[in-house]
Length: 141
Length: 132
Image (cartoon, rainbow over all chains, first blue to last red; front, side, top):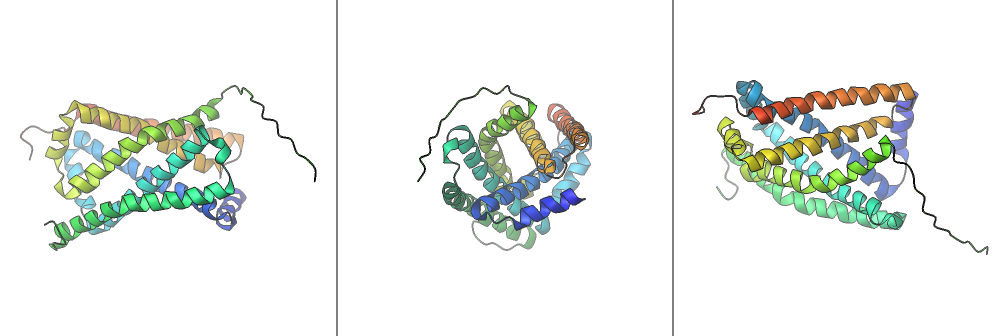
């Protein structure tokens, strides 16, 4: 139990600014994606094992609550992807650039790229939820 | 001011399991960018969950290209994800015995879900045509 406390207080208390935030966000988004991925493999497997259950799962995904979760999921996928590319690039090609200044700069760029990729997708998904769940035509009806 | 000299010395380290896993997290990352992003944008944004039903899945899987695409996704993404989960949990479990139990549990978890997905991907939509 002390390991849990030590690790969690370390996560929360370490003051590493951008590099630390990137680490935390990478973990949170990664855990979020792998949680959904596990559920998603099982729900898609229903098309073979129990087709009626697949339709139930779809009905659940079409609700507003899951729609909001889906918008968050897309952010997770974009942030984890851009940040993962950054990590893989430095580790494999430019290990000499692992410096605090470089981390601060590239983390900010990573977040900006992720948001730019995510925003149009998020707007379109909000449009879909409003259209299909509330009959509100935002645009492109 | 003391002068400092820096010597860069290349060493060959015999790869062990953890090192291979570490490298594969990077290799799979490069593969997952096109795989996951195309999949997510296409299914969640362009098509959207409101336009999906069994017929949609059957139509998609009628194409060998998309079945291979989904097989690659299942292979790379889930292994990458479960190994990532293992890395996170390694922060909390330090003992040799605990890590052994963790590794085996996650391996069995990965294998079970992977097989469920693989069987469905090969089996396809289990309903008589025409659908619904």
